Picture (cartoon, rainbow, N blue to C red):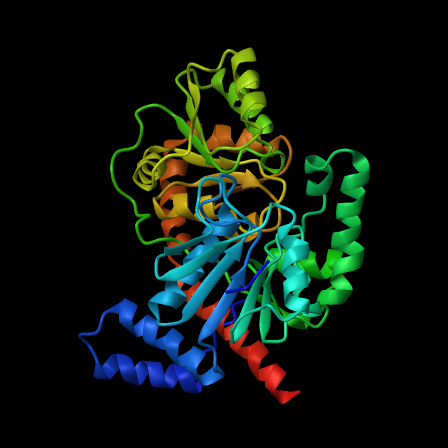
Length: 418
C-alpha cells in the first residue's frame, strides 16, 4: 500500500490542566469545542505531531464497517478539527473512490481486503511511506506489523482479543488455526514494546492475560458518546427490544432471536428490531421465519442516524448477545437516550454497563431472565433508565480524541529519549 487504522488523559494538577483552567477563566465566551480543539492542538504542538496517518483494515464507507471504523473516523475528525493533518488509509471500499475527503481529513483506500496487509508492510520497508510525524495502527484481528517497518512514533489500537472469533469466521479449520497462531504466538513478540490503546479496563485485562503484552504499555481510553444521543420523545406503547450491530457470527444474533421468541410467550405484545447489515442476514431471516416471528421481529438493515436515535428513544431495553466486544458503543448510545441494556457478561460490556444501575450483565439463561424482568417491571425500567444517562455522560469523544493523542505524544517522547 502506498502512503501519499484508565485513560491516557493527564490527571488533575498537571501543567497542562493548570493552563487549561486559566484559558477557560480568561475566555468565557469561547465555545467548549474551541477550547477542546486548542487542548488537542497544544498537545500535538508540544510533541511535534502535525501530520498523522491512521492505518485501518476498513474505512467507514465500507459495507462491513462497524464500531472500530466509527471509532477511528471520529478521532480523525476531531484531530482534523483541531488543525492536525490527518490521513486515514485502508483497503478499497466497493463503490467508493481511491481518494476522498471526509470531515476535514483525507481518506485513501487501496488494495484488496487482505492484500492491504502485505502491501502496506512492503511499502513501509522500502520507504514509500510519505511524510508523517506519527502513525496510528488499528489492529483489528489481522495486524499490519507496524513495529517492523514504521520509523516514527506509533500507537496501536487493539479493541479486544479475537480468540474464538477465528473459528467462527474462518473455514476450513486450518485457516482458523493460522489466525489463532498469528494472534497468540506471532504478533505479541512484535508488539511487546508498542504503546497499545484499548477501550476498557476489562479488555486490557484480557490482552495482558491472553496475549501476554506488558500491562504498563497498555493505555485505556474509553470511546465517547455523540451528544446527539439524549433522552426525548415517547416510549413505544408496546414492549420494544432493540439490538444493533453487524450481522456477523460474533454478535450471536441467532441467540437473541431465540431469546426473543421465548419472551414473546410471556409478553404477547412484544416487538423487536435488529439494526444492521452483514452476511449472516439470510440465516437470521430464515430463523425468524421458521419461528413465525417475522410479523413482530424486524431487521431493517442500515438506518439513518436520526432513525437510530428515534429507535433508541422508543425502546424499552437494548440487548446484546455478543461474544467479543472492546466496549459495545450501541450500549452507551442507547444509555444516553435513557434506555437500559441487558447484555452478555464479557470484557468491554463490563465497563459499558453498571450492573443493576444502568442495566444488567448476564451469563447464559440470565439473559432471558433479566430481559423478562426489565420488560415486566415499569419501576425497574424507570430506575435503570435514570441511571443509564448518568453512566453515558461520563464518556465524550473529545476526551477520547485527547486521550489517544496523549498516548501518542507519550510514545513520541519515549522515542526521542532513546
